[in-house]
Image 1 (cartoon, rainbow, N blue to C red):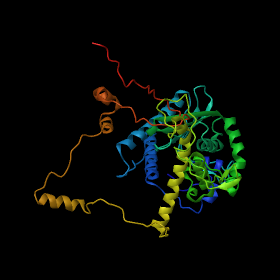
Image 2: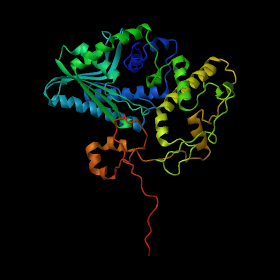
Image 3: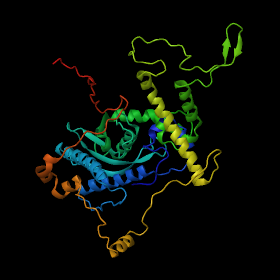
Image 4: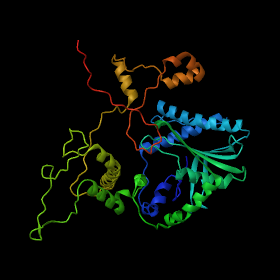
Length: 421
């Protein structure tokens, strides 16, 4: 996995396409890695290992006591199996595909100094024997559903791949797929070569503005990973404006007495003093002091935006206080609660056993994935397949734009009709 990132990186393209000056504004802020990013990096290394192993390359399996879990093994299997099936399909279509793993692609002809690293580029032919470029990207996260439809990161990777390798194949079709196993998401978007190139030309002026730090600053969900978000005036203004719009009008003008045409002190309106226009279509149990569910649904996107900004501000201020000793008026840094740990595990075991304590380890059956690897998938299915079940995932509320199918949750009657005996 490369450590060098372009200013106009493909992964942050949604941000700089919507808010061009943000990439320059965040330059003075450190790009700190999180535990989730570290896990994602390791998962990508495992993905790379599995595909290279399929291609019969000499590779060493990545190791990590912290991140190598059964779940990581499973989600990277999903990615590897999709890539392998794509390669095999191209072979069946009549071509020996060119497979490029962790390939650095250059799209600086569109975005100044722009480059990125694509997880997978596969060049060959499709089922109609047309030249095909297939870009595949692995997402280890489970917090945000990533859709591939007109995804700017994938389209920039595709532009880079097309620019570098179209001389080998006469590419007519560009196919892009995001594999996000933790959300059961395999999302594919396809376009023609011309459509992709036309899109590239359309963003060229925006990319130039972003590189120069110019343009209009705009807030939105693309600010999720912007390092300047905690101190961005535009973000603060938007969050506070949204809060005022949805909940209270902090800037309301003083009330005016219509009889004397003079300003009088504003009186806070409460549930008991506010006028109430009865909604005859609402259920009879609705109370005037409660927000109806339809209005709460309209507020949800606002809450997510405000909450994201609040989290970013608190994280930034905390880091300044804890890591740089900045004094924050009204706050202090304290020692949190910690757990006891052994400093020398071997010495603990030796001492305990010398004193007659021998029951020091717990035994447990190997995992389902380890059974499958030990037996092989076919033998595993024959012997143990009838004992394997995949329970439904946890229900989650998401926007309608999420491509996953909705679960039918039909309300059931809570009261049974009792027949007369």
